[in-house]
Length: 69
Image (cartoon, rainbow, N blue to C red; front, side, top):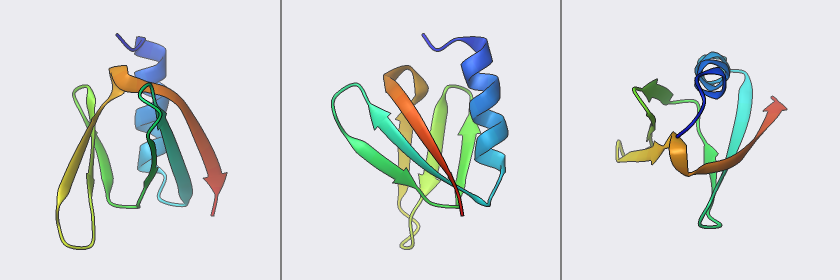
């Protein structure tokens, strides 16, 4: 389970629209989050250009990289 500090920081960074965020999952998947993202409970919810929804459980996150856009 993700720590409360990690969740708090993640929520803060997800709200900053000027940040590009890349999420590395435990299964090796790499997901670049677009600007249309939100943290709901223990999931990052991302909507793409076609309004399809992707849910990422934060317990599956291995690491996160942040880039100033």
